[in-house]
Amino acid sequence: MTTRILALHRLCPRYPRVLRLRRGCNTAHPNTRKVISPEKKSGSWMRYAGVGVFMSLAGMTGMLGFWQLKRRKWKIELIESRKKNLQMEPINLEEALSDPKDFRQVCLTGSLDYSKEMIVGPRSPPGHVDSRYAGTRGGYYLVTPMTLTDGTLVLVNRGWVKAQLMDIIQRESTDTVTFSGVLRKAEQKSSFLPKKAEKTGRNWLYVDPDEMLSNAMKENMKNVILLDVLSPKNPTGVWPARKAVSEYVNYHTTPEMHLVYAGTWFSLAGAIAGLTMIRFRPWAAAAVLVSRGGDDDDA
Image (cartoon, rainbow, N blue to C red; front, side, top):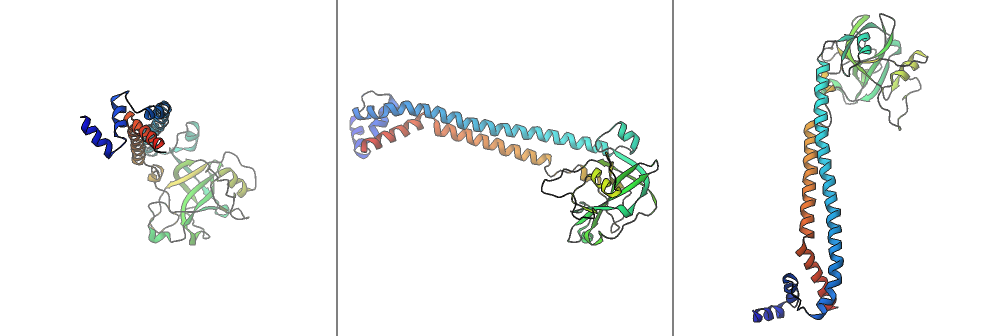
């Protein structure tokens, strides 16, 4: 055994030091004891600190994975709730206001004022519109004031037209119309956007029912009702193109994508935890200390 150790010492001068450190031998070379002892103390503290920091990161990424799972569950429940409300029979406006439910269809009857019609956009066409009819310049939603049979003034989003038709009035088939659709709220305005794209106030970049109707009627209007028209639908190629029910239950981030995000976070947490254990396990830390001690001896 002694002969083997001496042979290894000739090939690798640091071998005795590693052997003594792993076996806990106290017969180390005097210089080795003097160099490793203080570094061992500081190295142990740094090892625990490193484990704490990186395991905390692993825990945080794991929590993000659980958060994505909660978001997925919430998104599924939201979609189911919307589907249920959209499939219910349309109700009149009075019922809708007395018992408000998100995305419950409402039926309105009245006459349209085309002279005060506004356009909102540019916007991409509804998903069901054939690209052959949509054109290449985008389009606009037609938002028209409507006077109900009881005299109430509301706004209706009648649908989307391509940009080439935005200055041509798209009249409905009758003077008195009945629409079924979904009551909507004002859109969130970006701080970088002006309210109107033109001084005339006809072209708007986002939907704000109070501002739009106040500008059209030249008087202050509050709590204006806005209806996104779903029916009656116009045939293909007849404008405006109404929105489809499916557009209210389709999200850019689907429940499946939340599951992918959760898997990504969990994988990252596992990778961080695994690499932390490999990097900071005791024998790896000891090897680092021995290497540092050998460097100091050589110096």
